[in-house]
Every structure is written in structure tokens, then in C-alpha cells.
Image (cartoon, rainbow, N blue to C red; front, side):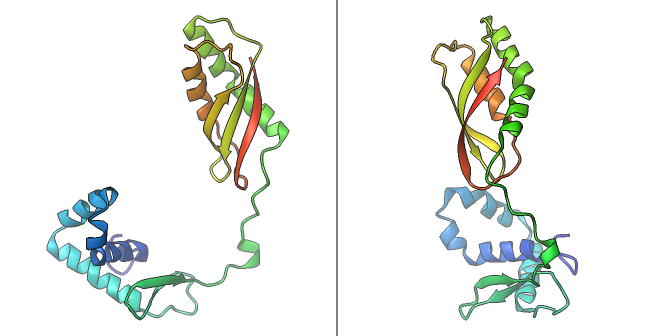
Length: 185
């Protein structure tokens, strides 16, 4: 729901903030699309959103509610969000330090058919293994960089191998890690 009693306060406050700071954001090319989206809304819709955002920002937080409420500074900007404290048992488990050897071995074995296809498609001989250095973003488990540690890998195979390895997803962990992984073929 975009407006009304059940409207998400973040949606309302986002458009309100964007409208108030339009001059600042108009200089940023990346914000042009959002400004055009706001401009395409009819005047009544914009007025409703702005009025509901004002009411939301001024509403006191209900003590029994866990829904966040916006707070205003003396300058009228939304400063922060208040929410009820999270119960101890509801807190998520802390992220682990990094992937273990078993997880890396399992992921490498799952990649075997895709990597073999890369070599077959390029008409190149399949080596017994590929060794690569991967940079993995811990929060998402995504491979953000790959570097082959095998200079003899055919140039026609390398883009396919890189695309395939970038599809890997590991379980989340803290930080970013550079990992050396052996992919058996």
C-alpha cells in the first residue's frame, strides 16, 4: 500500500525527503530517474504522499508497537528511527569467520560440469584441475573477482570459466576474503 493507514512509512518518508532536497539531488545524474518518477505522479498523489509523510514524521511512537517511527530534528529533517529493542532470542546468529574447507570442496565439485563444458565448447583439452584466486564478498557470498593461477589456460576458455565461477554462492560470513580454490575437473 503506497498511501493510507496501511502505507509503509519508509515509502512516504523517502518521497518526502526526495522532494525537500530536490535541488541538491538534481545535480546527481543517478537521482534523475527518481526525480522523473516523482514528477510523473499527479499533483494530488504528490500532495497526499507529502501530507501523510508529515503526519508520520510527527506521530509519536506507540510504546507497544515495534514499528519504527521517524523523529525530526530542530531543522525539520528526519534524524533517525526508533524501534522497540530486539528480544535476545530474536537476534540473528553472528556471522561466521569464513567458508570452511568442506564448503569450498563441495562448491568446487558442483562446478565441475559447467567448467568441463567451457573446455569442451572451446575445443580445448580438459586439465585435471583449475586453480583460481577468488575474492568473495562475505555478506552476499558472491564472487566479486577471479584470477586464474594457471597461465597455460587457453584464452578461449577463460571468459567462460570466469562467468561460471562468478555464479558461485557461498554461505554468508564476515568481511571479504581472498580464497585460493582448486576446481577438480
